[in-house]
Amino acid sequence: RPLVGVLAVQGDVREHLAALELAGARTRTVRRPAELTDLDGLVVPGGESTTIDRLSRLFGLHEPLRARIADGLPVFGSCAGMIQLADRILDGHAEQQTFGGIDMTVRRNAFGRQVDSFESDLHVEGVEDEGRTFRAVFIRAPRVEDHGPGVEVLARVDDAVVAVRQGNLLATSFHPEVTDDHRVHELFVRMCAAARVADAR
Ligand code: GLN
Image 1 (cartoon, protein in one colour):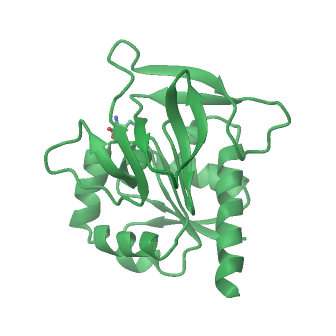
Image 2 (cartoon, helix red, strand yellow; image 1 turned 90 degrees about the vertical axis):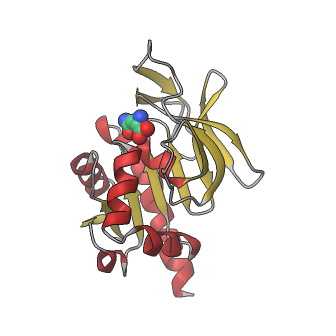
């Protein structure tokens, strides 16, 4: 079983750990650079991207994580985690930095104040589907405003892009960790297992 870390500086860490275990991974919380070594994958949880950014830099995780991403480590970011995987952000804080890796521009809190939170039934490309939609929970969610040709769109709400993949990086505007449907985590665990096999070759 792949060993998948959850960046545990802020956000809904516990929910991701539980979902990953149910999706077939071994798990570890990550707060220190040393805890990044030997991981098969990492989740950047939902929460507050500005806080995740600030604490990651404070704990010396920013540069090592960027290096692991450049190296091909599979990473899944949900909501704030999606923001942190974007090469470019809109409506971020002045000093906010992202880990980057996905060639996209993400707007924070993009669905407006009137609709802080909503749910939607989506088709998500790449999850085990059989016609069954995925109940997606959006909480002050970001959206992908534009992306490069290497980015695959996995899901949309109306016109808004809300799930993407680029190579070993996966990101969703919504929170698959808060429902008991673990198909997005299963997709990510499969990505981690596949990357490990490719690495061993
Ligand atoms: N609005 C938050 C941010 O900008 C993300 C919200 C979430 O992760 N639920 O970081």
